[in-house]
Amino acid sequence: MPNTKRFSAETIAEMELLARFELDSMQHGLKIHHDAPVDVLGAAQRLFDKGMISQADGGYLTDRGIEAAESLQRVLRSLEP
Image 1: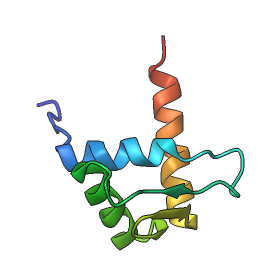
Image 2: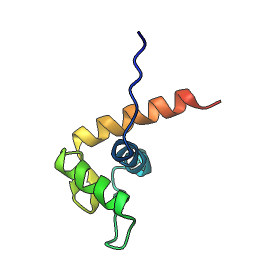
Image 3: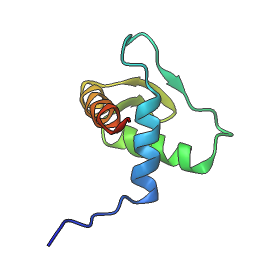
Image 4: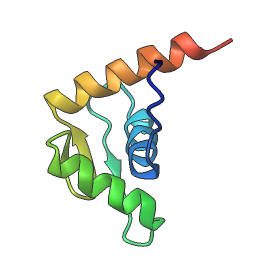
């Protein structure tokens, strides 16, 4: 039986936020403003709680976040036409 895993809205929001980080330069972080959409604020908090970003309102990718973002970028590139 094939794996029919569906991504939750929370997981998609986290992946979308991770995909916003520029991996070419670790000098660029993200600042999530307090008036950002609630799904973005929640994603940032969850990524912070998981140790993937340095601050609950964005900041920089941690080592764990870099690994996750690089993996996500590889998947996204492989899905491009």
